[in-house]
Length: 197
Image 1: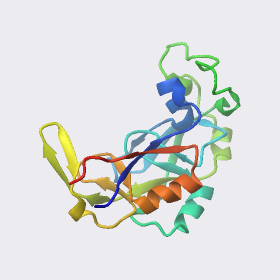
Image 2: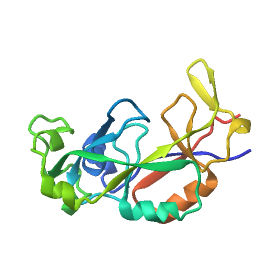
Image 3: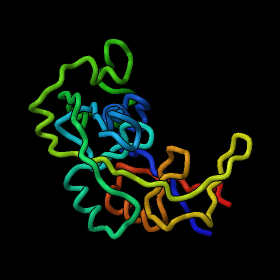
Image 4: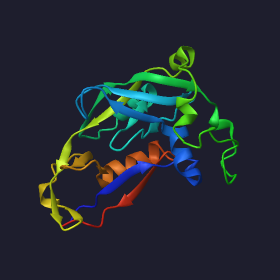
Protein backbone atom coordinates (compact mmCIF):
# COMPACT_ATOMS: atom_id res chain seq x y z
CA UNK A 1 0.00 0.00 0.00
CA UNK A 2 1.22 3.51 -0.81
CA UNK A 3 2.12 6.05 1.85
CA UNK A 4 0.41 9.45 1.63
CA UNK A 5 1.34 12.53 3.64
CA UNK A 6 -0.65 15.61 4.60
CA UNK A 7 1.38 18.75 3.90
CA UNK A 8 0.92 21.73 6.17
CA UNK A 9 2.67 24.91 7.19
CA UNK A 10 5.89 24.59 9.14
CA UNK A 11 8.23 27.42 9.92
CA UNK A 12 10.01 29.10 12.77
CA UNK A 13 6.93 30.66 14.41
CA UNK A 14 4.92 27.51 15.13
CA UNK A 15 4.97 28.19 18.88
CA UNK A 16 3.07 31.44 18.32
CA UNK A 17 -0.02 29.64 17.03
CA UNK A 18 -2.41 31.70 14.90
CA UNK A 19 -0.20 34.78 15.32
CA UNK A 20 2.74 32.91 13.80
CA UNK A 21 0.56 31.56 10.99
CA UNK A 22 -0.68 35.03 9.99
CA UNK A 23 2.85 36.45 10.04
CA UNK A 24 4.25 33.63 7.88
CA UNK A 25 1.38 33.04 5.46
CA UNK A 26 -1.23 35.75 5.78
CA UNK A 27 -4.78 35.04 4.64
CA UNK A 28 -6.44 34.61 1.26
CA UNK A 29 -9.72 34.13 -0.51
CA UNK A 30 -10.71 33.22 -4.04
CA UNK A 31 -12.46 35.73 -6.20
CA UNK A 32 -15.36 33.97 -7.95
CA UNK A 33 -15.08 30.66 -6.11
CA UNK A 34 -12.59 28.24 -4.60
CA UNK A 35 -10.24 26.53 -7.08
CA UNK A 36 -11.66 28.58 -9.96
CA UNK A 37 -11.13 32.28 -9.27
CA UNK A 38 -7.89 34.15 -8.71
CA UNK A 39 -6.45 33.93 -5.20
CA UNK A 40 -6.54 37.27 -3.37
CA UNK A 41 -3.65 37.51 -0.90
CA UNK A 42 -3.43 39.54 2.32
CA UNK A 43 0.03 39.34 3.90
CA UNK A 44 3.13 40.96 5.34
CA UNK A 45 6.28 41.94 3.46
CA UNK A 46 8.82 42.52 2.12
CA UNK A 47 9.95 39.03 3.14
CA UNK A 48 7.87 36.12 1.89
CA UNK A 49 8.76 32.45 2.46
CA UNK A 50 9.33 30.25 -0.61
CA UNK A 51 6.14 28.35 0.20
CA UNK A 52 3.24 29.40 2.45
CA UNK A 53 -0.31 28.34 3.28
CA UNK A 54 -2.68 31.34 3.50
CA UNK A 55 -5.88 29.47 4.22
CA UNK A 56 -7.17 25.93 4.09
CA UNK A 57 -6.28 24.26 0.82
CA UNK A 58 -4.19 27.18 -0.48
CA UNK A 59 -0.48 26.98 -1.31
CA UNK A 60 1.45 30.07 -2.46
CA UNK A 61 5.01 30.04 -3.80
CA UNK A 62 7.50 32.66 -4.94
CA UNK A 63 8.64 32.88 -8.57
CA UNK A 64 12.01 31.40 -7.59
CA UNK A 65 10.42 28.41 -5.89
CA UNK A 66 8.01 27.98 -8.81
CA UNK A 67 10.97 27.53 -11.18
CA UNK A 68 12.50 24.89 -8.93
CA UNK A 69 9.16 23.09 -8.59
CA UNK A 70 8.57 23.17 -12.35
CA UNK A 71 11.83 21.23 -12.80
CA UNK A 72 11.12 18.78 -9.98
CA UNK A 73 9.48 16.05 -12.05
CA UNK A 74 6.52 16.07 -9.63
CA UNK A 75 2.99 15.77 -11.04
CA UNK A 76 -0.55 16.90 -10.24
CA UNK A 77 -0.47 20.69 -10.25
CA UNK A 78 -0.39 23.89 -12.26
CA UNK A 79 0.16 27.55 -11.35
CA UNK A 80 -2.02 30.63 -11.29
CA UNK A 81 -0.76 34.12 -10.48
CA UNK A 82 -1.88 35.52 -7.14
CA UNK A 83 -3.40 38.99 -6.73
CA UNK A 84 -1.53 40.88 -3.99
CA UNK A 85 -4.68 42.42 -2.55
CA UNK A 86 -3.48 43.86 0.77
CA UNK A 87 0.25 43.83 1.54
CA UNK A 88 1.72 45.58 4.59
CA UNK A 89 5.21 46.23 5.91
CA UNK A 90 6.04 44.07 8.90
CA UNK A 91 9.51 42.57 9.21
CA UNK A 92 8.63 39.69 11.53
CA UNK A 93 11.51 37.62 10.15
CA UNK A 94 13.81 39.80 12.28
CA UNK A 95 12.00 38.80 15.49
CA UNK A 96 13.39 36.11 17.78
CA UNK A 97 11.23 32.99 17.28
CA UNK A 98 12.57 31.44 20.50
CA UNK A 99 10.57 33.85 22.66
CA UNK A 100 7.29 32.70 24.15
CA UNK A 101 5.29 35.41 22.37
CA UNK A 102 5.76 37.90 19.53
CA UNK A 103 7.27 41.27 20.53
CA UNK A 104 3.83 42.82 20.19
CA UNK A 105 0.25 41.83 19.46
CA UNK A 106 -2.33 43.73 17.38
CA UNK A 107 -4.31 46.19 19.48
CA UNK A 108 -7.48 44.18 18.90
CA UNK A 109 -5.79 40.92 19.90
CA UNK A 110 -6.89 39.38 16.59
CA UNK A 111 -4.02 37.79 14.59
CA UNK A 112 -5.43 39.01 11.25
CA UNK A 113 -5.03 42.60 12.44
CA UNK A 114 -1.26 42.40 11.99
CA UNK A 115 -2.37 42.93 8.38
CA UNK A 116 -5.84 44.48 8.51
CA UNK A 117 -4.89 47.35 10.85
CA UNK A 118 -2.30 48.68 8.40
CA UNK A 119 -2.84 50.26 4.97
CA UNK A 120 -1.85 48.47 1.78
CA UNK A 121 1.72 49.40 0.78
CA UNK A 122 2.21 49.27 -3.02
CA UNK A 123 6.01 49.48 -2.70
CA UNK A 124 6.15 46.46 -0.39
CA UNK A 125 3.78 44.58 -2.69
CA UNK A 126 6.14 45.28 -5.58
CA UNK A 127 9.12 44.03 -3.58
CA UNK A 128 7.41 40.67 -3.07
CA UNK A 129 7.68 39.94 -6.79
CA UNK A 130 5.17 37.71 -8.53
CA UNK A 131 3.52 35.09 -6.33
CA UNK A 132 1.82 31.94 -7.54
CA UNK A 133 -0.91 29.65 -6.30
CA UNK A 134 -0.20 25.95 -6.73
CA UNK A 135 -3.44 24.68 -8.22
CA UNK A 136 -3.84 21.07 -7.14
CA UNK A 137 -6.20 18.53 -8.69
CA UNK A 138 -8.23 15.87 -6.91
CA UNK A 139 -6.21 12.69 -6.99
CA UNK A 140 -7.87 10.11 -4.75
CA UNK A 141 -11.36 9.07 -3.66
CA UNK A 142 -12.45 8.82 -0.05
CA UNK A 143 -14.79 6.67 1.98
CA UNK A 144 -16.73 8.28 4.81
CA UNK A 145 -17.67 6.25 7.86
CA UNK A 146 -19.41 8.22 10.59
CA UNK A 147 -16.98 11.09 11.35
CA UNK A 148 -13.96 9.37 9.77
CA UNK A 149 -12.58 9.85 6.26
CA UNK A 150 -10.45 7.13 4.68
CA UNK A 151 -8.35 7.44 1.53
CA UNK A 152 -9.05 4.71 -1.00
CA UNK A 153 -5.55 3.72 -2.08
CA UNK A 154 -6.68 1.88 -5.23
CA UNK A 155 -8.26 5.07 -6.61
CA UNK A 156 -5.09 7.17 -6.40
CA UNK A 157 -4.29 8.61 -9.85
CA UNK A 158 -0.52 8.60 -9.27
CA UNK A 159 -0.07 12.37 -8.86
CA UNK A 160 2.57 13.53 -6.40
CA UNK A 161 0.52 16.49 -5.10
CA UNK A 162 -3.25 16.07 -4.81
CA UNK A 163 -6.46 16.78 -2.95
CA UNK A 164 -8.57 14.00 -1.54
CA UNK A 165 -11.98 14.13 -3.23
CA UNK A 166 -14.46 16.50 -1.55
CA UNK A 167 -11.93 17.57 1.10
CA UNK A 168 -9.52 20.49 1.39
CA UNK A 169 -6.57 18.41 2.59
CA UNK A 170 -3.44 18.49 0.47
CA UNK A 171 -1.54 15.23 0.17
CA UNK A 172 1.83 14.22 -1.17
CA UNK A 173 3.17 10.95 -2.44
CA UNK A 174 6.37 9.61 -0.91
CA UNK A 175 8.26 11.16 -3.84
CA UNK A 176 6.54 14.50 -3.29
CA UNK A 177 7.23 14.51 0.44
CA UNK A 178 10.90 13.73 -0.09
CA UNK A 179 11.21 16.54 -2.64
CA UNK A 180 9.57 19.16 -0.40
CA UNK A 181 11.70 18.04 2.55
CA UNK A 182 14.82 18.71 0.49
CA UNK A 183 13.69 21.96 -1.12
CA UNK A 184 11.39 23.69 1.39
CA UNK A 185 12.95 22.54 4.65
CA UNK A 186 11.76 24.65 7.56
CA UNK A 187 8.59 25.91 5.86
CA UNK A 188 6.55 22.70 5.56
CA UNK A 189 5.72 19.77 7.78
CA UNK A 190 4.19 16.39 7.02
CA UNK A 191 1.92 13.91 8.73
CA UNK A 192 1.64 10.31 7.57
CA UNK A 193 -2.02 9.61 6.73
CA UNK A 194 -2.95 6.50 8.66
CA UNK A 195 -6.54 6.27 7.43
CA UNK A 196 -5.86 4.53 4.14
CA UNK A 197 -7.71 1.46 2.90
